[in-house]
Image (tube, rainbow over all chains, first blue to last red; front, side):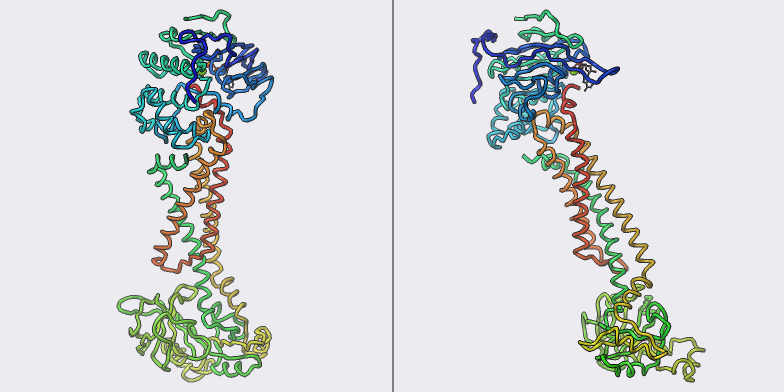
Length: 249
Length: 377
Ligand SMILES: Nc1ncnc2c1ncn2[C@@H]1O[C@H](COP(=O)(O)OP(=O)(O)OP(=O)(O)O)[C@@H](O)[C@H]1O
Ligand SMILES: [Mg+2]
């Protein structure tokens, strides 16, 4: 598969005419019940479009991680409706049973801490995603090396995670998130473990990926210095999306 | 991509160390089972060697191993005349302690009539006794070599043959000699007072007493009926080979057997718990990786395989090393360690079962792991 080109031209990824990659309507999520009930998400509706890089802000406990988990089909919403890449996956209940296969197919994750598998070298940490998708080993490793080069950590392809610097590890993790060419990339504080210079580099990489793969990126961040790297910023407060969404560009 | 193998390779030292620990544990378990089997087998070798069907002993006793038994030397002829008896032979048994080449030797001496039941079942080296005096067949455990001379009482005996693994129920190595030599030795080694009595022919028919008479029955005769017939003599008692073996395992070594049996069971239980714990913690150590795997879309099959393969590899390597270890050291044990392939297979099966069950516990937990635990902090 060749990287898709953005439909809306080189500069503006806002192909509003194009169907959104992620559509959430009135998604709510609460944990527990009665006294201990926590409403992590209340009536969240949003659209993410191909090529967009979106920042997700909000105080601690406002539901940012929960929102990513819902979009990533890791946490089941309590109510609402959700469509990913044109497929309705949740409508008051999961409509697909093989959520893991769905994740493998459509979604790439970047974690706050890189979460690389300590017993695999950089190349295999990326290739494993393709291995899961039954890609033949040689091809999987070739693609992994290609991605590592793309993210400028090709020189560390045989290193194990323990010997990688924070920034290198994060870039390997991004390569892993991109391995199966997902069109939805979820990143939970991807730059929290990095200094601001490296954080900027990682954000530029995500932008590049969004453009090259025509993907939607949503990244949780607390880092004000990188706000200007986003197309839009959404703010969560007490599980609710703030009305005003800031258009950065 | 085999994740189990990759993880093992990455933590090879730790994995091997755990395997070594496990193999030591399993070696101990195997040796205990071997000691148990050896004890039972040893108890029976002396009784099984002659290949008898019937043991005729002094009436009112369960001799000659569980209790002392003395019967007149001519009993053999009476028994041989019984219908259904093919061949009979007199035997004596006595334990002695002697010094040979500055080494203490505890011996079980068996006197038998060459050509009749009572001698060694097979010879591992040299030959059977051919002359009527001063030749012995010794077990290898005595440390004696072919042609070596051994002084017992007033006489010197020459080792003409060797047996293997012939010991008494107490673990003493066996020496075979002719009945006549053994009777003379019994007389010489008896306390002086008893000796004087015997010489006068007072107690039990003088010097010509034996401890038991062994008989083999004719192919179509019933051992039970022949034993029945032998019991009609007031001064005799008789039992079949099966009864004799039961007495040996049930009475003679019963306590030791129970003791070792119980200890072996406890050891098995402890090992089960230890193996289960090792495998379980091994899985627990990987929960974060498992959560990550689930998050990136790994099917349960891959996660189960990761855990199960490692557990099985550990069990197999541990068992393999353990078995090799015990096989190479078993001959240095003072008493026989009898390793039976079926016991090994049983233990291997048990180890694999424990590994599977323990990793099953881990897998259950691993599959319940919320992939979200890998996300965020
Ligand atoms: N599995 C869970 N069970 C119960 N409550 C939960 C669970 N996950 C999240 N919550 C609650 O939901 C609310 C939102 O949590 P969430 O992790 O989404 O916040 P966040 O915005 O990511 O915070 P932070 O910036 O600290 O990471 C919090 O009050 C949290 O305690
Ligand atoms: Mg969070």
